[in-house]
Length: 325
Length: 145
Ligand code: SF4
Ligand code: SF4
Ligand code: FES
Image (tube, rainbow over all chains, first blue to last red):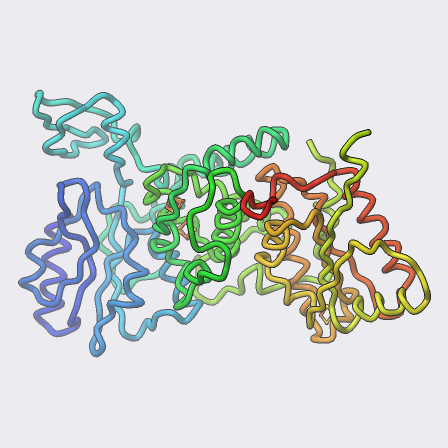
């Protein structure tokens, strides 16, 4: 797959269809590929595509589109939702962009492999649904399904929502257990209020306010962010038991409510392992139940649920007066 | 005697300029009483209330936050309160999800002619906050003396 993509992108450079391409290259280690901008066919030599290309490249288009000519972007199925959302919000211009939709059969979380007790990893190759792991202490194996990234566990399906051309072998594959997506949200909802408070106090007090979750998010694309304003009261790290982190997290999630495509990038990049998707999914779940099923980024011309209303919407007192557990 | 009996809830009320702010005025001029600890902040429309306003009020020591706007269909800007309605519903539900007492927040629709409703709404809200007691979960430690 990597070589097929590389060859095709080089071709597009050579016949002047594109002047730039956004893809991935090797990072410090073979398992931390980073987003990269390629300006010529020769640059593409270092391009990689394998189990560690989790980062969603759509947001890079805002700042890295070539000033003239077309910029190519490689999008996995889930990334196309974010792309559509950025189009909806007029943050990018489709006329300057050429999309190759590339197939994906799930991205791997290196930490989950390490958690299996596999150390000193030097190389990983895929063989069917199995990963063969070369380590300093010999060869190990594991099932790929056991070490998928959190976000891939609730894959929306392998279909690309938008593309100019496709390089994919599993376009029609449907998610297997999409129904599990709200399991943890339901579990939390069924706890008592005190238990929920303790759960979130524990999780959110780990936050170091690095802002990685905000920076990675394709829905968070304001030029000026409230969290960068020192007068906002949410610009710094506060005492662990103050309300400040919760305020940050409620507002972060609220600002993307109705626009979050559930791409899972925020949870993936959090260095503290905070399950941010459980906040986003609470909003998604509430929106689905109160205002009708909605998937942000499914198409580029939807009206988001928070920029819409009906005269029959429930009153906020429906929540305020609900019995407290 | 319990310290709690000394408790005087601090309430922030965001009131829309075109309706409930005038409603509060009418309540005043009709000599209807509502608790003095309700601090009114005038906003141009209920949809001006950003979720961060609500949270910041709590952070700075409010025990309850109430938002009052024109009745659905009567918004001076036609549809502002419909948007506010969705936003606040989701916000309150999120507070509940984090284990924070959602009863500390409320939205009510009060017109300029409803001085009586204004005073009832405020009295009810304040007595609810009395029951919930002091806001501990939402305050900022650094703001506490
Ligand atoms: S909030 Fe998280 S899951 Fe949602 S769009 Fe942003 S990065 Fe993706
Ligand atoms: S990425 Fe994690 S630690 Fe960093 S600000 Fe977000 S939640 Fe906090
Ligand atoms: S003007 Fe009163 S709610 Fe919009």
